[in-house]
Image (cartoon, rainbow over all chains, first blue to last red; front, side, top):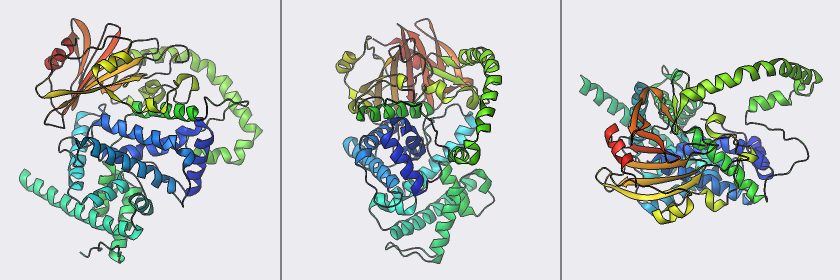
Length: 195
Length: 319
């Protein structure tokens, strides 16, 4: 996961990408993993994820000149707002892939070069975790995904979702505590079954 | 355990939870295993983030550069050499330090380049040929997990993302893939579009996406002078099970063909399609690839285990 930029670094990258297409990769590369992580945690099929990530970035870079700063880190919030809306539109259009993540295939194997044991262990754990997220309310699911997979700060999540920052913090606390409890219970159940 | 309420009141306990979350996100690695169980859980959650395929990542980058150039009326003309800078803040700090402005630095770099260049030029072709021969087969890049990071550099897989000569000019509409029916797709590709006449039960046609540069394949070789390969990917989904997905992708074999879908060399098996050599990769995402009629075909199936025989049957049913 890339480190978070300071407002100055972010503004610098955006300004460069606006004026020189050859600087686009600098801005893009900083955010592509986070946007992919966020969309990949919501959408099932990797081709759909790639299409939506492409659609998001095309919208962002098409409208980069119209973007106006509205406070610190507002580019991240703007970018993820577009990603959020793009996914929402996709789900409304098709209604084929509801927000729920399928049991057996959450973190799709985009890296088949990993050894089979590693794949099985990591993906089983990821599957379990992503399944647990779907047990939360839609708002909390979104906050958790933006926080953990989109790598956003709480005030950026608040901007994306149109909430107060303290409300985001409160939901995040509650959601993570719930998730941890369920995860612990699931692990204990699994251990007992193994006995 | 006290809990924050929905109105956003965050007490000391909640603040401690938030601090734990930030700590876990700052270090989402396995070295927090001995930390507090909650921090450990948060770090585990952060590590489960889906990761993009490097080929896709490179291809999109090229398209976005092209998009911005399109917006600005074509590739940027320069009167001075481009100072290409990657996003490494450590590098930027180094470059902005006093050493960066030193004449000694320039002298040292030039001397090093003079010494190293002949050695590298002599050694590179043989090593490169050996790696490519091992790795690339019919639109797949077969990777030995122990050598994967060094053996498959991004430029090898995706070409030079910022090379203006290698970036085809595309309109914004072209950048977002559109699903076409067979007839419309056929009008956009310079080869006969062949689709399977046999598929596992329940699979139905979902559309064809046409693109250039290959979906799994893209390249930085000779792109300035040669037309990039055209690809058509036919997609199929299961009528009742959303988890099942199948695609048949055909990509032209041209002078610029190269790279492909990354797959584990250990999971690859030899196969034949119409008597032609093919590669079958078994896994959660099974693939069959071969070359026929000057096209590289890759069939991908996920969500359902298909045997080599079933994939070959699909391949041999293309009409």
